[in-house]
Length: 400
Image (cartoon, rainbow, N blue to C red; front, side, top):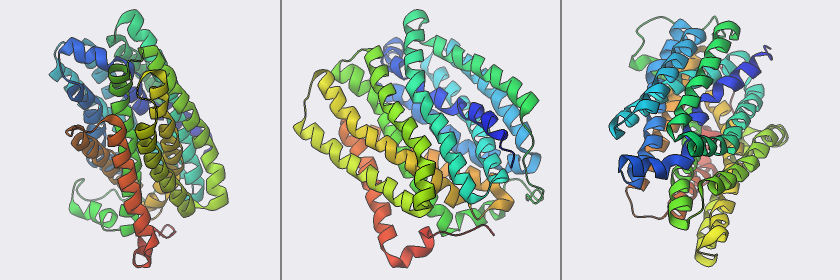
């Protein structure tokens, strides 16, 4: 059903990871230019994701009320404007503000993409298509840092935001001419946009909340990894920007393979067992990170590989987790998919950004910070799944 929709959604979903990954090699340079600390420049990532999460509370109901197309068009327009604002910002506060706007823009297209999958496909099909979309998302970390590093070396870090702006212009043309309206006829469109009654059926559903927190846990681990990596590898270990891009890209290639293999795993194991497997991978990755930092090399490229190798297992776990967890969280909300998708995005992104922001206020080194987040959250979720009293939180269920 509407399988020709997938290529359009794939192009749209690039907007969010592009805004995260393309300027990663430039973070140390940006910190020096604006005369801010490492944690402050990392805030441009955290603010983007936080705004992307909070914005979904506002934009999700709009997607249900007015349709997917208008929200997508408005989001891409804001993405263009905010990218230009970031490119010309002369003070750090204006860059942070531009990143907040860019996060709001990216959340608009994200809601449309994931709601459209829920609109057009069954939960089982949806898990596969979410995994394909996540595969596209994972291509960006393989390519964007290298592209961003080359752009920054030739034209300065501001050129990375100019590139984002021009990509969004292309997406605007595609959305304007090719994106169909996918909102189901039975979508709830009456009543005030923002009221507790709209969110209550979603937030009071334990099954939704469990898998939303599972998505948040994976995203928090990835955000800690992404935000800490440039500072740890470039500033602390001393690898070059291009070497960082190569290491980051190699890790992303593993993620790409995992994302496109995830539908096969889901078909063979089912959604819930795949989630258990993914959480187990996060826990093992945390343990390996602690082990290699304790026993492994401390300097040079060998130390960089010691940090990145456990992160490959993190990326594999994240690739396996996000598709089935997203599908199971949304499976019961066909009549209000936009609102449910918005709440899922809010919990996943804003929760992850708050966790990352709190960890960044500590004195933990990058390997310890990432290991603590992914190991601690994965352990908690696995313990819940082992207790029979919580079976209704995580057992398979179907749309009603």
